[in-house]
Image 1 (tube, rainbow, N blue to C red):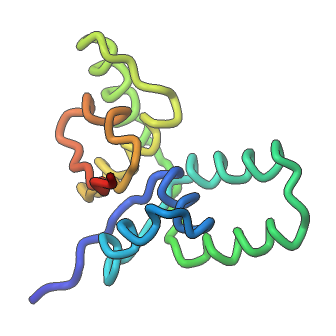
Image 2: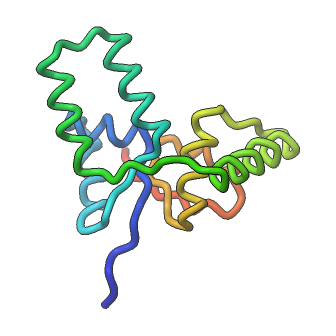
Length: 137
């Protein structure tokens, strides 16, 4: 059996895992044994959230230590081209996608790996994107 496929983890799932939210267990099971990555956009969203909510230094350090388990994906010119195709394609289909969601989807598409998100509806309009989400009741 081959190595597990890398997965790009969306900001919402990173947050659930960090907080040990009630639905975190479903994502932990889904992500077990997979190499994990986050886009630069996810890191920026998390840094913004810590700043906006005025987290203390100790809690920020815990989050940064938690994030160290993820490979950080940096955008390049190809990511930008994929992002542009996503944004324009979604708009043409009458389903605009948020700026940040398009960057996160572009990171997954560029590597041809699944995106793990609890906001699947934000990404379903993106062509050729594999979405993994937990069915939580």
